[in-house]
Amino acid sequence: MTQLHQHLHEIFSPAKRAIEEGRIPGAALGLITKDRTREVAVFGKAQIEPHSITLERNMWFDLASLTKVIFTTHRLLELVRDGLIGLDDTLAKHMPDLRQYDLGSPERALTVRHVLAHQTHLPAVEPLYTLGQDPDTLRAYILQRAWKSGPPVYSDINYILLGILIERLTGQSLADQPLPNGLSFSPPQAASVATERCAWRGRVIKGEVHDENAFALGGSAGHAGLFGTVDGVLDHALHLLNGGNLPTKLLAEMTTPISGNRAIGWEVQQSGWHGGEGHSPRTIGHLGFTGTGLWIDRDRGIGWTLLTNRVHPSRHTDTGIMALRRETGSLVGRLITQG
Image 1: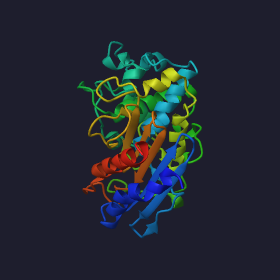
Image 2: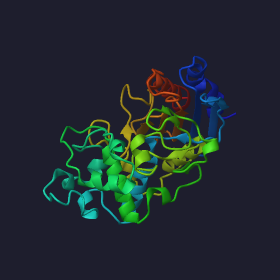
Image 3: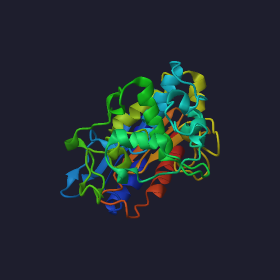
Image 4: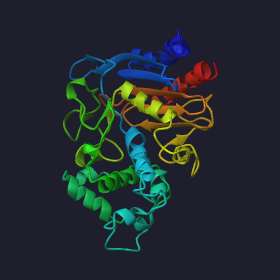
């Protein structure tokens, strides 16, 4: 019996308790080590409205902002590796039409590095979907808008711009970008986990992106739109634990803070963060609004993901998701990484 298997039940117990108490419908916990040892626990419901569906291991979760790191950050680092772009290039170098009517605008001075690390003046979020659902027109609006200046914040707008940049560099829409098994921008609806009963769309969302802006942009964007199975997410963690097919220098960018605990794409562990306690300094993590999360301890060679549908049937409830994430991560730190 592996150490992972020995402790799986205890590590999953906070999520199982949250399901039994009715705070979240369902959850999948996955653990993986650098040597490919893998354990998965699944419990609860994939859907409770309009009818009940039991959660199964092969079902697809809306990963929400895990899109930012699993897809957008990694794809851009691959393009850096291949010499198609540099981290210190401006976005305008590769998207010359960015704020093309004001060549002195602050948006034209933004670099790839600072956008990836959320070190820009751009806002956290804007209800772009209220402007319409024509993806090409919305992209043009995003590129030409004079964004109100403010202090650096975690920003969806940063990653929407990076998604457009990837499309320009590769000549492919995000929906057509190559993805490994277990990750998709267009999952099978019948095997997808339900998210919110959306007041705007007038239905329970299932198999289509929960994020309204990503939906209006065609279903896939740099900040949201990626779906994954628990094994698909674990495969990405394993990929990074074994180098991610990236040069050492680029891997280091993901664990080296630029400001606070923000590195390229990821957050680096600090006391009190969402990944819990007991992890090495090179532990990175990221969250998704729908109730997802992925953490990777590079020094100790372990990754873990907790996937939930905590926004089903509504985002407007207190599910205790942050405390659940920290408790789960601390159990990983105590039981696995420290023996």
